[in-house]
Image (cartoon, rainbow, N blue to C red):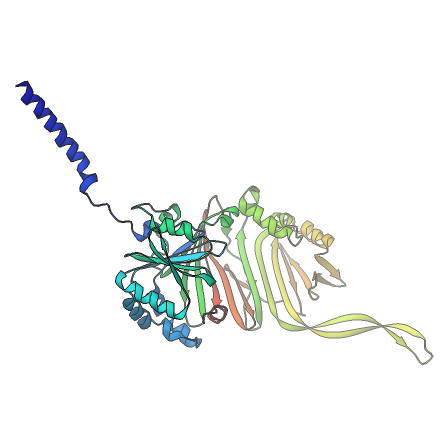
Length: 442
């Protein structure tokens, strides 16, 4: 009886042990996803290439881009099917501040990848070697590497391929790196076709915890929507009831700011405050004094031509060879400038400081900022208005914070759209012609 009882206990223990160990012996280990393989980087992001091809087709056509037929939706889709790539799903990319970049492209049929590699080999000299997880293909001249599995293709250009390769190929299920986990959980710009996310250390030094950029475009411009999240309160608010110069056909540059910085200047330990002071030191500008005197409105405009009269002394020799100095007046055409700034009670002291440093100079009845043309100054309540020409420029009521400028015929713009305690939303526009010109591929 005792032996039977002992046998039952042993069998029971064995059964329990089997049930516990069984999942480890027989259950299939889940394969890591592409998201689990992605390495940490200064800049990361995703791109839906087929959707981008649709969005940019009119821009490529309008700008008569070379090889634009290779970037159409139809061509990219056909090539992806031919070589086993899955461009219906996002391509994930990553980049470091030193210029090293890479991406992971999802694969639909890995049996076709070698056909694509053979095609590349006909166009460029590549060599293959065996790595820990399979074959590695390298274009030595450009330090470009390619490796693949049944689920993805790894493309990389840079000097740190070994560690990237080990991270990507040796990843485990749910082993998502912190920056990618934060990005993939981000709800902002979720439906955008091209998004860049960054926790770059250089941004953190200025107090920015996270920056996100999303792409938009039409036939003539690239628009980049921007989101910035600060690690500490920004302490800057948008100001209402402002006035500034109106942008017109003669304007080459314009900038308008309407900000409430009353709380911002109280925390001189903030990273953003220190960063702004650092920028001012580069040009020997008294930034701290300016922030303490500024009432939040600033409008600047450059454009148009004005006639400026300048008095000068000319030595004249008469018929008896006597030299006398004669005062004469000459007229010259100069670019028009207008500056309006609102100041608090510390405004007069700040203006005196500018004159003491030689940034603002008195020239007869006029003023000059460094090497600017002659400017007339008007003071109205808490505002200082400087302008070239004989008449005061028209001011219009406006609360927008933005800048626009032309350079070699190309139009640029930047705007601050909204602001709260920790976050800022804005955008900037770059001419498509400039981007396409800079890209050697086009």
